[in-house]
Length: 267
Ligand SMILES: C[S@@+](CC[C@H](N)C(=O)[O-])C[C@H]1O[C@@H](n2cnc3c(N)ncnc32)[C@H](O)[C@@H]1O
Image 1 (cartoon, rainbow, N blue to C red):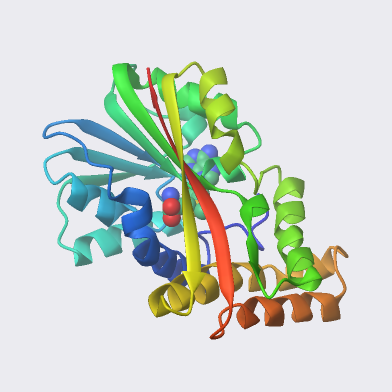
Image 2 (image 1 turned 120 degrees about the vertical axis):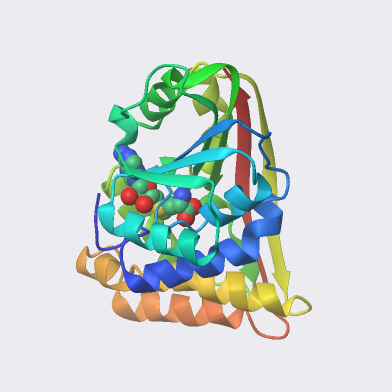
């Protein structure tokens, strides 16, 4: 993966993921809670931006959160300890080579991870091996093809497209949200249901203007400036215009829309 832009590594990215998580908690997670005593695997927990929410929504479930990045796990542990959450254990592990037996978990939770993987079906398939029969997997992903805004701007669309291009070059897929149904089906999950979760932002929702349009989406796009220009995908002045235009959508008459996709499947 390309460390220059992949989420979850540097401090700015850490702050962005925290902002993103707190803004979107209700929209993405309010309908996720696991029964008492159930064993839940959070695969690719990163800096723990979702972990506290998942753990608090299911206070009597036993959550195992894994990530391949040791640095991210240190942040995640700190965050969970600071929140006083005690039903989470962390382990450094690779989704493609997890140190657990078959049927080790009742539920699996995966958020913003598949978009970074070149073999998402294989990842889902591997995860399924550790799920008991009848258990569930929950997958949440964004889709960069779902962005529209007012005032519209060609430069802003071009800047967003840079993220799509860079992620594709790194083997990922920034437009994976729309593929969750076929991916889960191909990995052998049953009863797959997908619900689109649209974030609609106008200035009557100042916390979303700040927390989503500015601090999540535009900050994320700004974060790829150097990589995109260095890769020759976009001219610097077009990129800068695109960023200005994204901030413009956060003004009093601006509107911003983005859709996340949440899928649940059964083994
Ligand atoms: C964008 S972050 C998402 C983190 C967290 N789930 C969230 O929603 O904020 C993607 C995470 O997936 C992790 N990751 C990528 N490939 C992995 C693999 N093969 N095994 C375990 N974790 C992986 C990365 O280290 C990173 O922390």
